[in-house]
Amino acid sequence: MAKVRKIFVCTSCGATSPKWVGKCTACDEWNTYQEEILMKETQQEEKKKAWRSVSNGTALTVPVPLPDIKAGTTHRLVTPNGELNRVLGGGIVPGSIVLIGGQPGIGKSTLMLQIALELPVKVLYVSGEESEEQIKMRADRIGIARENCYIFTQTNVSKILTEAQKLKPELLVIDSIQTLSSPHIESTPGSVSQVRECAGELQRFAKETGIPVFIIGHITKEGSLAGPKLLEHIVDTVLQFEGDRNYTYRILRTIKNRFGSTDEMGIYEMQANGLREVSNPSELLLSQKDEDLSGSAIAATMEGMRPMLIETQALVSTAVYGNPQRSATGFDLRRLSMLLAVLEKRVGFPFGQNDVFLNLAGGIRVDDPAIDLAIVSALISSLQDVSVPADVCFAGEVGLSGEIRSVNRIEQRIQEADRLGFKRIFISKYNIKGLDPERFGIRIVTIGKIEELYRGLFE
Ligand code: TYD
Ligand code: MG
Image 1 (cartoon, helix red, strand yellow):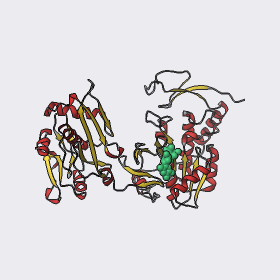
Image 2 (cartoon, helix red, strand yellow):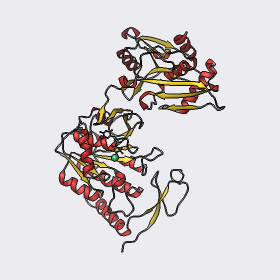
Image 3 (tube, rainbow, N blue to C red):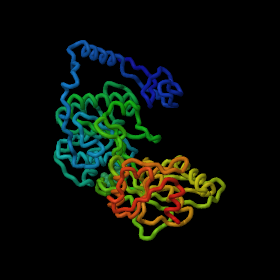
Image 4 (cartoon, protein in one colour):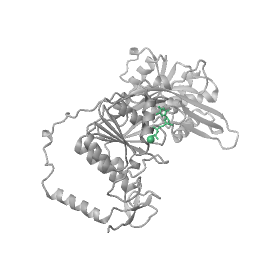
């Protein structure tokens, strides 16, 4: 008879404890312990034995001097999906394991099925969430018919891997890790030990066969991947699919990448027939309007290696109920408070008595500090009710004493603004070094302090 033992596992770091504890001693997180049924003792013993025989037996690999290792021989599988190639660092690496996280309903299954259909090679799409008919209906919506895309509805990881061994696809997609279960473990699907075990088995499969595996993972309300952080350590690449449900734009962001840069980003638009790649985001993120309205300013930002012009909108109005409100969509609220404090202290604008609402067009979240200058301009514009000319854009970081700091890749930003027909760009005066203003058609206005911005723009 197999013996069943219960333990408590931290959902954040995977640490275990024989009894429940409020605060994890390993990662200091609160309320993360969950009860789990541990692997059957007998099987654990078996596993230990198997491991011993491997480690005692013939060595699998021997140490090799670094110069003898041949590099650059990995051929990436370049997909027809340009945005996906971009976030992966140039295509799918053989034997790699990629995790795609995102909130329910954001479009993870749609994205993966679409990629599976677009690829001209043999793909196995495993779903533990939907029936074959449901997937067929989705594929019909996407509208690509592909003979070598195989659908398998299964949740048992051993069966999945057996079929995958037989079929030998060039890509394996798992939708989703939380529905999988391994027969070696007794706890329910989605629990920490199941997720960890299944991911481990998939990883072994990927490394042994060289078949890349894409795993879809759900995200909890707090925004972290459900299951332990450990999952992020197991996989080679973590992509996050995000977006505002009320908008159609979706962003695929690289969180971790062993084979490329992590500040890349892919943009899609969710349409009735699947996801459309947005290769030129600027034109979408600038709202179409004819007249000049106050409270709006354009920022020349960078997302990864790609320049992107985005509209920032502010609404400043008198606070009716004692406590002024602050709200920001797509921008850090604390950073907004900081910018308001700088404006109040350095230029003397009375933001303290006003409600302030800030919004970035398209439901996009921007972390680039160069957006500060546009936000400050939008705030002043709304407060004073004077519009910023439509052919002006901004790229600069605002420091605590109101100084305008230089930002990276200024040339690319200016070029993009120039290409889109802007006539003036405001940048930091510290950014002008090594830059030849004559090279660009756009006029470059340099400022050093926030007061100069006001004078340069509105006076
Ligand atoms: P889905 O891929 O099921 O999300 P997830 O797997 O992340 O939970 O996405 C679903 C949403 O996308 C759903 O609300 C319907 C919508 N959708 C479209 O707008 N167009 C389409 O072509 C498809 C297939 C789905
Ligand atoms: Mg899904």
